[in-house]
Image 1 (cartoon, rainbow, N blue to C red):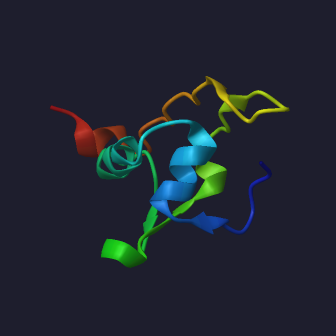
Image 2: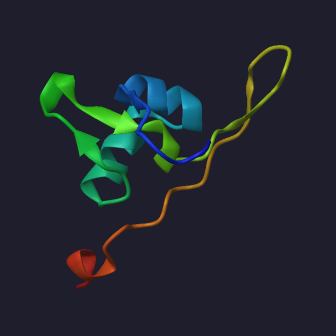
Length: 79
């Protein structure tokens, strides 16, 4: 997707987009891979920060899940 203004979606929407479980979206956010806008149930994630999963064009069945986005600030997560 083109960058620019964020396209904010729920964790469930982003999970479908990436072909990953919602828990993975939350983990990616906690690892600094995704920007979180808001808190709790109102949290939203930028669709432009992830790749789309590969899905069958007719059935929308998942073929390949999207790869994990890179960690934005490596220094923050260094051991």
